[in-house]
Image (cartoon, rainbow over the protein chains, first blue to last red):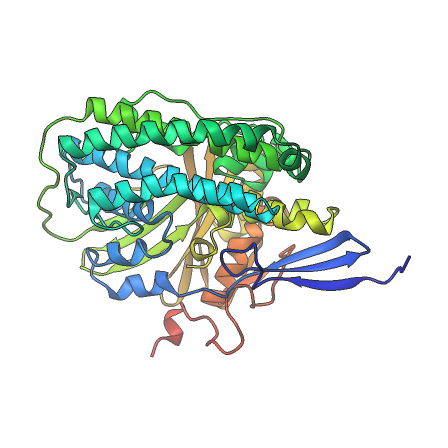
Length: 360
Length: 117
């Protein structure tokens, strides 16, 4: 056996990577000795762009930070500005925001689970999961006119309503989604090959996860019982749910959390539909924001933080975005060294990396 | 408005951060604002969904101590601030040397007000 070390560049282009990130892997035989992530391939300087746009126009900028978390980025931004300007968003708008947020969460988790299946070569499972995801994409198109960047948030509410016919169709479609998921779930959770590739891989203890600041399903898979939706933003304060938590902290647990969250999201949408009040969907906004605010929302990948500094003009002085993938990158630094080369794609994908979000 | 801000001098940053770690706070991120001649930096922490923020200001020429020895996760936003604002940070446990988020063909410190055209 050779005792020479080899440096393998994993990425920025790789078949399992949906977006460019590079891990420089120092490998001895099949074991990773060192892994340094390298980013910056899709940095667009959006935080700088925001400073020259009108604060209303910034909604279009932030919802393009990432296509998958798009609605939640706009939601975080709008809620932060509404908080600065002391705006009272109509209750119906808050419920509509919950419905669209949870639809995004479902489609994001299904997308990710399909990519994970693809990463260990289970192509047919990947296709089936994305087929289920099409149900959600169709709902997004029906309710907003767009499949991906739905652009329904405005400062002061939302710009489109979902009528009772559409709400009925959403309920029916989500029932179909549950039936389809139940069939797929048996494979995802019990298949020998899936378990072989995920159980016991990249284990992170609860203490380490907290120390690293892991968020979202990645943190909850290690037993961290935290979900920003419990702070009650939008209409979440009126809904009944608790964070989905697992304790084994491995790739399998991260998958289980996301699968359970799909069902949780469907339940949250059904609750929101049953409780949604009749009211306006937006209010008129006058003036400019002034002051500083920090606001957080639970995106599919975890907690996103927006810090805004406004000076009373139409341009913001600063918008700082900390996305959940940025917080979860330390997991790679801790678990890839010491792992096998063949496990690297699964470990990397297990944090559900969104590089567009990370780099902005 | 932001609640629970503790404004401190830069010299006490590491001591205050260590206190927060000992109290069980999770490090969330750091935010930098370029005020022209100085930087204003917030360090955001969370415990049971309640946030606490440490605020420091520092002139652009001075070095700021890194919190990454206390919170390893601090290394990433500190590298980002170093890249984008040209901030001088000492003691980073993982230092990308100014090449974390930008490449060598990009103007140094593109977010800094001094590099604006």
